[in-house]
Amino acid sequence: MQKAPFPTTVEWLFFRKEQLAIQTSDLIYSFILTSKESGDILAVFHCLPDTHGWVSPACAPFGGIMPAGKCDVTQLTFLLTCVREWITDHGGKMLTIKTAPSCYAPLIHELCHRSYLAAGFLPNHTYSNHYIPIADQAFERIIEPAERRRLAKGKKSGLSVAIKPSIYDKPTEDLLHCCYTAQGYTLPVPRGKMVHIINALPDHYLSFTTLLGNRPVATALMVHVSDTVLYHFLSGFLPEFRSLSPSLLLFEAAYELGRASRIQILDLGISLDHHGNQKPTLAGFKKRIGGIECPKIIYRARF
Image (cartoon, rainbow, N blue to C red; front, side, top):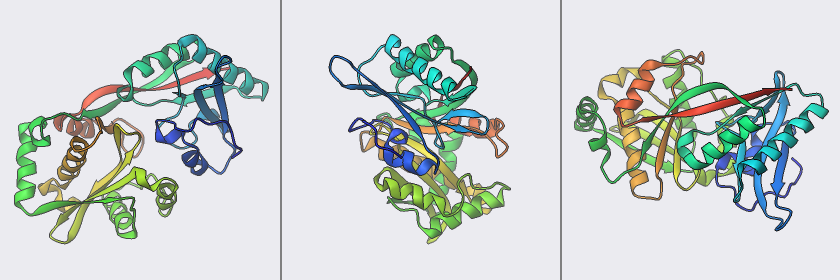
């Protein structure tokens, strides 16, 4: 990846060059909007061609525009128009942009939404994303009574949680693989690749493991997307321990970690099955543990 005048600090992890470098082995094209007056970087945008047109991001939960300074709709529309024209000049016919959930930064989301529309990008699909606002109340107070009883039952049965920062070891990977395989799923990240991803910026990753005695029965991988957002990336539990609801303890640990730090949002993500279809049971679980819905939009423009 060629060097570009990146801002020294980009708020969201997936826009940082260390993460871009491991998303793909192909060339990523970066568009940097700067101010003529001050020379300050106002926004960044990354994309690349694939088999179905151009996409942003290469391989990450979201991409699109990342404002890095104070800017308005006119300026962001100019950036997107430049991107469109450049892609068209290079033979591109379509650009698909997967954006962050609106809960991350509602004002930025609205600013970017208006800019996408003004530049000719239309919502192609809107997912329902769930998140938990981190509040003063303990986790057990924000979840529904039935989930509260399950949480208490799990703890009474001897479940506990271990948190390991910057570590994704073979036992954790093996456990996730077993959890996914037992339910007929395939890990979305190939075995061995996750270590490579985490090693790029290890301080941004946390693994949570629910233990019954010394036996791991559930695990989750969380990502510090920014100082204020913790994103639930992967998780799973062994089906034979379903009656103890071991996943509840994972989310409680993540929520309580947020209460003890600057984290304001626990992003639970969208609710899809392994075929990419909506999974109402998963969405229902997220709602029962305090999850609130917000949109996560994919935009598309054909040239």
